[in-house]
Length: 372
Image (cartoon, rainbow, N blue to C red; front, side, top):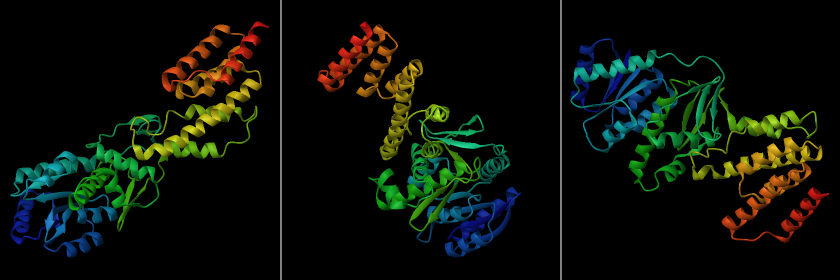
Protein backbone atom coordinates (compact mmCIF):
# COMPACT_ATOMS: atom_id res chain seq x y z
CA UNK A 1 0.00 0.00 0.00
CA UNK A 2 1.54 3.31 -1.13
CA UNK A 3 1.23 6.19 1.32
CA UNK A 4 1.89 9.93 1.37
CA UNK A 5 2.34 11.81 4.66
CA UNK A 6 1.59 15.49 5.25
CA UNK A 7 2.38 17.36 8.48
CA UNK A 8 3.89 20.80 8.90
CA UNK A 9 5.82 19.65 12.00
CA UNK A 10 9.02 17.90 10.82
CA UNK A 11 9.48 15.90 14.01
CA UNK A 12 5.86 14.66 13.88
CA UNK A 13 6.38 13.69 10.24
CA UNK A 14 9.53 11.74 11.07
CA UNK A 15 7.81 10.00 13.96
CA UNK A 16 4.90 8.93 11.73
CA UNK A 17 7.34 7.63 9.10
CA UNK A 18 9.14 5.51 11.67
CA UNK A 19 5.93 4.14 13.10
CA UNK A 20 4.66 3.19 9.64
CA UNK A 21 7.93 1.50 8.75
CA UNK A 22 7.63 -0.46 11.97
CA UNK A 23 4.12 -1.63 11.05
CA UNK A 24 5.16 -2.80 7.58
CA UNK A 25 3.17 -3.33 4.36
CA UNK A 26 3.34 0.39 3.63
CA UNK A 27 5.55 2.07 1.04
CA UNK A 28 6.01 5.77 1.77
CA UNK A 29 6.14 7.49 -1.61
CA UNK A 30 6.09 11.05 -0.32
CA UNK A 31 6.55 12.98 2.91
CA UNK A 32 5.77 16.70 3.03
CA UNK A 33 5.62 19.65 5.41
CA UNK A 34 4.15 21.94 2.71
CA UNK A 35 0.47 21.53 1.85
CA UNK A 36 0.83 22.97 -1.66
CA UNK A 37 3.80 20.76 -2.51
CA UNK A 38 2.00 17.72 -1.12
CA UNK A 39 -1.13 18.54 -3.13
CA UNK A 40 0.82 18.78 -6.39
CA UNK A 41 2.50 15.45 -5.67
CA UNK A 42 -0.69 13.64 -4.68
CA UNK A 43 -2.63 14.89 -7.69
CA UNK A 44 0.12 13.87 -10.11
CA UNK A 45 1.14 10.64 -8.36
CA UNK A 46 -1.92 9.44 -6.43
CA UNK A 47 -1.14 7.07 -3.53
CA UNK A 48 -3.42 4.48 -1.99
CA UNK A 49 -3.35 6.21 1.36
CA UNK A 50 -2.89 9.78 2.54
CA UNK A 51 -2.05 10.64 6.16
CA UNK A 52 -3.07 14.25 6.58
CA UNK A 53 -2.71 16.61 9.53
CA UNK A 54 -5.90 18.62 10.13
CA UNK A 55 -4.05 21.92 10.62
CA UNK A 56 -1.11 22.54 8.30
CA UNK A 57 0.30 26.05 8.61
CA UNK A 58 -3.06 27.82 8.34
CA UNK A 59 -4.32 25.35 5.76
CA UNK A 60 -7.50 23.42 6.56
CA UNK A 61 -6.66 19.74 6.16
CA UNK A 62 -10.29 18.89 5.45
CA UNK A 63 -10.34 21.37 2.59
CA UNK A 64 -7.14 19.88 1.22
CA UNK A 65 -8.70 16.42 1.46
CA UNK A 66 -11.74 17.74 -0.39
CA UNK A 67 -9.55 18.87 -3.29
CA UNK A 68 -7.73 15.54 -3.40
CA UNK A 69 -10.93 13.48 -3.36
CA UNK A 70 -12.56 15.57 -6.07
CA UNK A 71 -9.78 14.39 -8.39
CA UNK A 72 -8.96 10.98 -6.92
CA UNK A 73 -11.97 9.66 -4.93
CA UNK A 74 -10.33 6.25 -4.43
CA UNK A 75 -7.57 7.61 -2.19
CA UNK A 76 -8.03 6.56 1.44
CA UNK A 77 -7.47 9.50 3.80
CA UNK A 78 -6.55 9.24 7.46
CA UNK A 79 -6.67 12.49 9.39
CA UNK A 80 -4.02 13.07 12.03
CA UNK A 81 -4.65 15.52 14.87
CA UNK A 82 -3.28 16.60 18.24
CA UNK A 83 -6.54 18.22 19.30
CA UNK A 84 -9.33 16.43 21.07
CA UNK A 85 -11.91 19.10 20.40
CA UNK A 86 -14.65 19.53 17.81
CA UNK A 87 -12.71 18.00 14.91
CA UNK A 88 -12.18 14.67 16.65
CA UNK A 89 -15.78 14.60 17.82
CA UNK A 90 -17.02 15.33 14.32
CA UNK A 91 -14.89 12.62 12.76
CA UNK A 92 -15.90 10.16 15.43
CA UNK A 93 -19.56 10.81 14.71
CA UNK A 94 -18.98 10.63 10.96
CA UNK A 95 -16.82 7.48 11.22
CA UNK A 96 -14.02 9.14 9.24
CA UNK A 97 -10.63 7.55 9.97
CA UNK A 98 -8.46 9.68 12.25
CA UNK A 99 -5.51 9.10 14.55
CA UNK A 100 -4.60 11.06 17.64
CA UNK A 101 -1.04 12.20 18.27
CA UNK A 102 1.19 10.73 19.55
CA UNK A 103 0.59 7.87 17.14
CA UNK A 104 1.06 4.33 18.41
CA UNK A 105 1.95 1.32 16.26
CA UNK A 106 -1.10 -0.58 17.47
CA UNK A 107 -3.42 2.25 16.43
CA UNK A 108 -1.73 2.44 13.04
CA UNK A 109 -2.01 -1.29 12.59
CA UNK A 110 -5.75 -1.24 13.29
CA UNK A 111 -6.26 1.59 10.83
CA UNK A 112 -4.32 -0.17 8.09
CA UNK A 113 -6.16 -3.44 8.67
CA UNK A 114 -9.50 -1.68 8.44
CA UNK A 115 -8.57 0.12 5.25
CA UNK A 116 -7.17 -3.04 3.70
CA UNK A 117 -10.37 -4.93 4.49
CA UNK A 118 -12.43 -2.16 2.94
CA UNK A 119 -10.29 -2.17 -0.17
CA UNK A 120 -10.73 -5.91 -0.60
CA UNK A 121 -14.51 -5.91 -0.25
CA UNK A 122 -16.29 -7.20 -3.30
CA UNK A 123 -18.20 -4.63 -5.28
CA UNK A 124 -21.84 -5.04 -6.20
CA UNK A 125 -22.34 -7.22 -9.34
CA UNK A 126 -22.82 -5.33 -12.60
CA UNK A 127 -26.62 -5.38 -12.62
CA UNK A 128 -29.00 -2.53 -13.17
CA UNK A 129 -28.54 -0.24 -10.18
CA UNK A 130 -31.39 2.02 -9.16
CA UNK A 131 -31.72 4.83 -6.65
CA UNK A 132 -35.33 5.12 -5.55
CA UNK A 133 -36.85 8.28 -4.10
CA UNK A 134 -40.51 7.25 -4.36
CA UNK A 135 -41.41 7.50 -1.50
CA UNK A 136 -38.04 7.28 0.32
CA UNK A 137 -34.35 6.77 -0.41
CA UNK A 138 -33.52 3.16 -1.31
CA UNK A 139 -30.84 1.49 -3.40
CA UNK A 140 -31.30 -1.61 -5.55
CA UNK A 141 -29.00 -3.85 -7.55
CA UNK A 142 -31.40 -5.55 -9.92
CA UNK A 143 -34.27 -6.57 -7.64
CA UNK A 144 -32.04 -6.89 -4.58
CA UNK A 145 -32.10 -4.04 -2.05
CA UNK A 146 -28.74 -2.64 -0.99
CA UNK A 147 -28.49 -1.47 2.59
CA UNK A 148 -26.57 1.75 3.05
CA UNK A 149 -25.72 2.73 6.61
CA UNK A 150 -25.69 6.52 6.93
CA UNK A 151 -23.59 7.62 9.88
CA UNK A 152 -25.40 10.94 10.15
CA UNK A 153 -28.68 12.37 8.93
CA UNK A 154 -26.74 15.29 7.45
CA UNK A 155 -24.79 12.95 5.14
CA UNK A 156 -27.98 11.35 3.88
CA UNK A 157 -29.70 14.70 3.53
CA UNK A 158 -26.81 16.30 1.64
CA UNK A 159 -26.58 13.35 -0.74
CA UNK A 160 -30.30 13.68 -1.49
CA UNK A 161 -29.95 17.45 -1.91
CA UNK A 162 -27.22 16.93 -4.52
CA UNK A 163 -29.28 14.17 -6.15
CA UNK A 164 -32.23 16.56 -6.22
CA UNK A 165 -30.00 18.93 -8.27
CA UNK A 166 -28.42 16.09 -10.27
CA UNK A 167 -25.94 17.30 -12.88
CA UNK A 168 -26.18 20.94 -11.74
CA UNK A 169 -23.64 22.97 -9.80
CA UNK A 170 -24.81 23.57 -6.24
CA UNK A 171 -23.05 26.44 -4.49
CA UNK A 172 -21.42 25.66 -1.17
CA UNK A 173 -22.97 28.69 0.48
CA UNK A 174 -26.43 27.43 -0.56
CA UNK A 175 -25.67 24.04 0.99
CA UNK A 176 -24.44 25.65 4.21
CA UNK A 177 -27.52 27.86 4.44
CA UNK A 178 -29.70 24.76 3.97
CA UNK A 179 -27.94 22.39 6.38
CA UNK A 180 -25.91 24.53 8.82
CA UNK A 181 -27.65 27.92 8.89
CA UNK A 182 -26.73 28.64 12.51
CA UNK A 183 -23.05 27.63 12.43
CA UNK A 184 -20.21 30.13 12.13
CA UNK A 185 -18.44 30.33 8.78
CA UNK A 186 -15.34 28.28 9.59
CA UNK A 187 -17.15 25.52 11.44
CA UNK A 188 -19.86 25.29 8.78
CA UNK A 189 -17.30 24.74 6.04
CA UNK A 190 -15.52 22.14 8.17
CA UNK A 191 -18.82 20.32 8.64
CA UNK A 192 -19.52 20.54 4.92
CA UNK A 193 -16.15 19.09 3.93
CA UNK A 194 -16.34 16.26 6.44
CA UNK A 195 -19.90 15.42 5.35
CA UNK A 196 -18.97 15.32 1.67
CA UNK A 197 -15.99 13.16 2.60
CA UNK A 198 -18.31 10.81 4.47
CA UNK A 199 -20.74 10.57 1.54
CA UNK A 200 -17.90 9.62 -0.77
CA UNK A 201 -16.60 6.95 1.59
CA UNK A 202 -20.09 5.62 2.23
CA UNK A 203 -21.07 5.27 -1.41
CA UNK A 204 -18.08 5.06 -3.74
CA UNK A 205 -16.93 1.62 -2.59
CA UNK A 206 -20.39 0.28 -3.37
CA UNK A 207 -21.26 2.47 -6.35
CA UNK A 208 -18.05 3.43 -8.18
CA UNK A 209 -19.97 5.52 -10.72
CA UNK A 210 -21.25 7.94 -8.05
CA UNK A 211 -19.00 10.97 -7.96
CA UNK A 212 -19.15 14.34 -6.21
CA UNK A 213 -17.10 16.87 -8.14
CA UNK A 214 -15.79 20.06 -6.63
CA UNK A 215 -15.89 23.17 -8.84
CA UNK A 216 -14.37 26.05 -6.86
CA UNK A 217 -17.33 27.18 -4.75
CA UNK A 218 -19.81 24.49 -5.77
CA UNK A 219 -20.43 20.75 -5.94
CA UNK A 220 -22.08 18.62 -8.58
CA UNK A 221 -23.22 15.02 -8.29
CA UNK A 222 -22.75 12.53 -11.12
CA UNK A 223 -24.18 9.00 -10.96
CA UNK A 224 -22.99 7.48 -14.24
CA UNK A 225 -25.26 4.69 -15.46
CA UNK A 226 -27.29 4.41 -12.25
CA UNK A 227 -31.03 4.73 -12.77
CA UNK A 228 -33.04 7.26 -10.75
CA UNK A 229 -36.65 6.16 -10.35
CA UNK A 230 -38.41 9.54 -10.24
CA UNK A 231 -36.47 10.89 -13.22
CA UNK A 232 -37.29 7.81 -15.26
CA UNK A 233 -40.93 8.00 -14.21
CA UNK A 234 -41.15 11.65 -15.24
CA UNK A 235 -39.49 10.86 -18.58
CA UNK A 236 -41.95 8.03 -19.26
CA UNK A 237 -44.82 10.37 -18.42
CA UNK A 238 -43.57 12.96 -20.92
CA UNK A 239 -43.43 10.30 -23.63
CA UNK A 240 -46.95 8.94 -23.14
CA UNK A 241 -48.95 8.77 -26.38
CA UNK A 242 -52.59 9.83 -26.59
CA UNK A 243 -54.86 7.72 -24.37
CA UNK A 244 -56.64 4.94 -26.23
CA UNK A 245 -57.39 1.24 -25.83
CA UNK A 246 -54.01 0.36 -27.33
CA UNK A 247 -52.05 2.76 -25.11
CA UNK A 248 -54.06 2.19 -21.92
CA UNK A 249 -51.65 -0.53 -20.64
CA UNK A 250 -48.75 1.96 -20.79
CA UNK A 251 -50.77 4.42 -18.72
CA UNK A 252 -51.72 1.79 -16.14
CA UNK A 253 -48.12 0.60 -15.87
CA UNK A 254 -46.90 4.14 -15.32
CA UNK A 255 -49.47 4.74 -12.59
CA UNK A 256 -48.47 1.49 -10.84
CA UNK A 257 -44.78 2.47 -10.95
CA UNK A 258 -45.51 5.54 -8.85
CA UNK A 259 -44.75 3.98 -5.46
CA UNK A 260 -45.44 7.07 -3.39
CA UNK A 261 -44.71 10.76 -3.26
CA UNK A 262 -41.18 12.01 -3.85
CA UNK A 263 -39.12 11.71 -0.64
CA UNK A 264 -42.37 11.74 1.32
CA UNK A 265 -40.91 9.72 4.18
CA UNK A 266 -37.89 12.03 4.37
CA UNK A 267 -40.00 15.20 4.53
CA UNK A 268 -37.36 17.69 3.37
CA UNK A 269 -38.75 21.18 2.84
CA UNK A 270 -36.56 21.74 -0.24
CA UNK A 271 -38.15 18.69 -1.90
CA UNK A 272 -41.69 20.05 -1.62
CA UNK A 273 -41.93 21.66 -5.07
CA UNK A 274 -40.75 18.53 -6.86
CA UNK A 275 -43.00 16.41 -4.65
CA UNK A 276 -46.06 18.47 -5.54
CA UNK A 277 -45.12 18.52 -9.23
CA UNK A 278 -44.89 14.71 -9.44
CA UNK A 279 -48.03 14.26 -7.33
CA UNK A 280 -49.96 16.48 -9.70
CA UNK A 281 -48.69 14.58 -12.73
CA UNK A 282 -49.82 11.29 -11.19
CA UNK A 283 -53.18 12.67 -10.06
CA UNK A 284 -53.97 14.30 -13.38
CA UNK A 285 -52.98 11.16 -15.29
CA UNK A 286 -54.88 8.83 -12.94
CA UNK A 287 -57.98 11.03 -13.15
CA UNK A 288 -57.82 11.08 -16.95
CA UNK A 289 -57.50 7.28 -17.04
CA UNK A 290 -60.36 6.81 -14.56
CA UNK A 291 -62.62 9.07 -16.63
CA UNK A 292 -61.63 7.19 -19.80
CA UNK A 293 -62.47 3.83 -18.16
CA UNK A 294 -65.78 5.23 -16.92
CA UNK A 295 -66.71 6.51 -20.38
CA UNK A 296 -65.82 3.13 -21.85
CA UNK A 297 -68.20 1.43 -19.41
CA UNK A 298 -65.36 -0.28 -17.55
CA UNK A 299 -66.80 0.74 -14.21
CA UNK A 300 -65.05 -1.75 -11.94
CA UNK A 301 -61.62 -0.75 -13.26
CA UNK A 302 -62.59 2.89 -12.91
CA UNK A 303 -63.69 2.26 -9.32
CA UNK A 304 -60.39 0.60 -8.38
CA UNK A 305 -58.42 3.51 -9.76
CA UNK A 306 -60.79 6.02 -8.16
CA UNK A 307 -60.23 4.35 -4.78
CA UNK A 308 -56.47 4.59 -5.24
CA UNK A 309 -56.75 8.29 -6.07
CA UNK A 310 -58.81 8.79 -2.94
CA UNK A 311 -56.30 6.90 -0.78
CA UNK A 312 -53.49 9.11 -2.01
CA UNK A 313 -55.52 12.33 -1.92
CA UNK A 314 -58.10 11.93 0.89
CA UNK A 315 -58.90 15.66 0.90
CA UNK A 316 -59.61 15.89 -2.83
CA UNK A 317 -63.35 16.37 -3.34
CA UNK A 318 -63.21 15.31 -6.99
CA UNK A 319 -62.28 11.73 -6.09
CA UNK A 320 -65.43 11.32 -3.98
CA UNK A 321 -67.58 12.75 -6.74
CA UNK A 322 -65.99 10.46 -9.30
CA UNK A 323 -66.66 7.39 -7.14
CA UNK A 324 -70.25 8.49 -6.53
CA UNK A 325 -70.85 8.55 -10.28
CA UNK A 326 -69.11 5.18 -10.73
CA UNK A 327 -71.12 3.46 -7.96
CA UNK A 328 -74.32 4.92 -9.35
CA UNK A 329 -73.43 3.46 -12.77
CA UNK A 330 -72.69 0.11 -11.07
CA UNK A 331 -76.07 0.29 -9.29
CA UNK A 332 -74.41 0.08 -5.87
CA UNK A 333 -76.54 2.31 -3.60
CA UNK A 334 -74.69 1.28 -0.43
CA UNK A 335 -71.25 2.32 -1.73
CA UNK A 336 -72.73 5.41 -3.38
CA UNK A 337 -74.16 6.67 -0.08
CA UNK A 338 -70.98 5.69 1.73
CA UNK A 339 -68.93 7.93 -0.58
CA UNK A 340 -71.31 10.82 -0.11
CA UNK A 341 -71.28 10.49 3.69
CA UNK A 342 -67.48 10.21 3.73
CA UNK A 343 -67.25 13.38 1.67
CA UNK A 344 -69.66 15.29 3.92
CA UNK A 345 -67.67 14.16 6.98
CA UNK A 346 -64.33 15.12 5.39
CA UNK A 347 -65.57 18.58 4.42
CA UNK A 348 -66.82 19.19 7.94
CA UNK A 349 -63.75 17.79 9.75
CA UNK A 350 -61.04 19.30 7.55
CA UNK A 351 -62.57 22.51 6.22
CA UNK A 352 -65.59 23.14 8.49
CA UNK A 353 -67.87 23.61 5.47
CA UNK A 354 -71.17 22.09 4.41
CA UNK A 355 -71.76 20.38 1.04
CA UNK A 356 -72.03 22.86 -1.83
CA UNK A 357 -75.22 23.19 -3.91
CA UNK A 358 -73.36 21.52 -6.79
CA UNK A 359 -72.53 18.53 -4.61
CA UNK A 360 -76.09 18.21 -3.36
CA UNK A 361 -77.30 18.37 -6.95
CA UNK A 362 -74.86 15.60 -7.96
CA UNK A 363 -76.07 13.47 -5.05
CA UNK A 364 -79.71 13.91 -6.05
CA UNK A 365 -79.01 13.13 -9.72
CA UNK A 366 -77.08 9.95 -8.87
CA UNK A 367 -79.74 8.81 -6.39
CA UNK A 368 -82.40 9.32 -9.06
CA UNK A 369 -80.31 7.21 -11.44
CA UNK A 370 -80.16 4.43 -8.85
CA UNK A 371 -83.96 4.35 -8.44
CA UNK A 372 -84.74 4.22 -12.14
